View 1: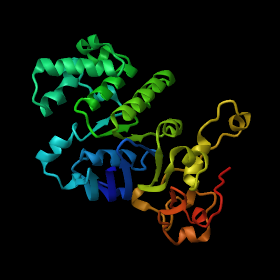
View 2: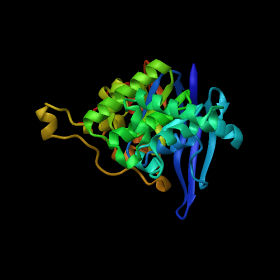
View 3: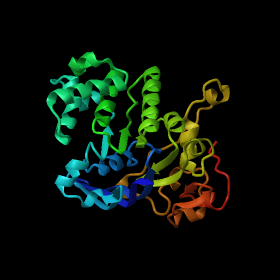
Length: 326
């Protein structure tokens, strides 16, 4: 069953530089109990896509298209209905826990706050439930009396996950939720998230530039470039057998431990993503592409099926040619 669906979503910011298209025609589905990863360089539109779900974008953002949660268009909701959906229907885990937590309130109070706002319960019952949530994410209930600065980075991230689970949402969005953590704590948090998805059957959208995270945790992955999805398919296959040159470049840039060839000849991608205000004609990736053909400069490639459960916005892949970037 489809839990979340983006339909031809466009997000354009208006500022001193004029109109800047950040998301351009994204179509994506997330099923209940499924984990979908979104990858791409900084500025490709990943976080804008996440913020659009709960309408957390600034007033300068113009949003068109549809974002359906259980079939209901989030963009068409009144503020009262949207307020009810936040936390209960969908919640978000941000990257910087220290910036998201209130420094002057104890952890338990912050976890209990959405419970008190959305459910008919007493402060004592909400506090007890907050302690149970902290225990569920691997923190002792006594930590409810701590302030954010008294916790480590990994512990604060666990608190953010507990808050996201506070009202039993159907959908969780994790925006670079493990980026600032060391590898051991990251592994623990990722295991925790995976277990919660399995146990509760929630849908999870995981945004990250760490391909190893997406490959190991996600069922499917979508790769974004210049505001568009350029490839989508099973997560492990997208990064090990890419059907778009940008996905292949991302995978090649990831170091392979124990591989001397990868160490001596690291992959990567020259140049920078295009300025959203000055996108090149044809395929946006063409100026950085190692396999571009003449057609790439003349036409914009649509996202079409290239393999079973794989879609790619690349003329070369659509013609059945292999994608090789090294």
